[in-house]
Length: 326
Image 1 (spheres, one colour):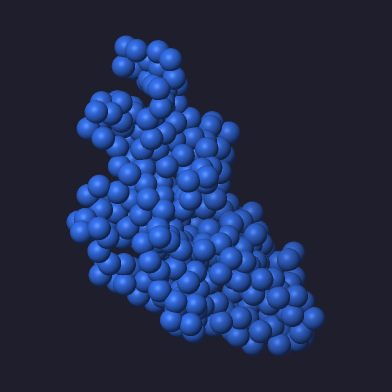
Image 2: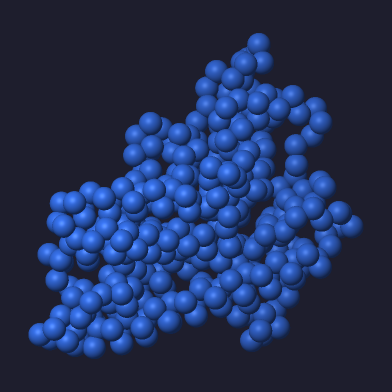
């Protein structure tokens, strides 16, 4: 999720955990001078401290973003570190500070788990990216819901009830999206295209419509992408014919050598672990050859670039330049 959503989520959830102010009988949520609320909000955004990797280049950022700082072990250690600093500075009980910090960071990584980008929850034991593929990286509905909740809590005396209501609504929304995504993938598995063997399928959230999915079907010869709108299907019985598919033909044996060279570089290995539906494109540029690979989770037309890695290979079959764009 985006930083603003993480920040607002802390603002909305904190009243569920906050002590009441004994004068107003309301959670001390908006008394931001209170160190506990500060720590909760800071902790909710702290796993994204790995953004500093972006200053070392986009390829480095791709390798380390949502890595150890987004793992269960990582947030345990980060929570202990923040709690130690703040508890000593303000003489607040370490245990309570740790529980607040760990809860905020846990919410952060679980939010990130819901989208297609993936999060390495089990580092350092496994570098596999866990992803529910249910929520877009920046979900305007969750962002809007949290923003409205914060505004209402600013003017309301019933902040706890407002927090419970909007937290519940958000959880129901996420669970519904998870259910729809799982159902969509089940439909895709039963689809056969041109008698080709289906290898894997994926259904990924649209950035605007909660009912529209960006679908990918990988066969032994092609990648096929298309949009599937569940609401249109339910309301109007709309079906998708093969003409709705965008066809990405897989690379040929003749060009395997260049792709394998690109894969063999350090960044090629990093990108191969990240990409679930890598579409390779080989271009001759004079004496050099360019290999471009795009993860089709984030590209659904011929014009879109998506998450694309680029490798320039010279006539001696060595990678002389590499980069990454989105």
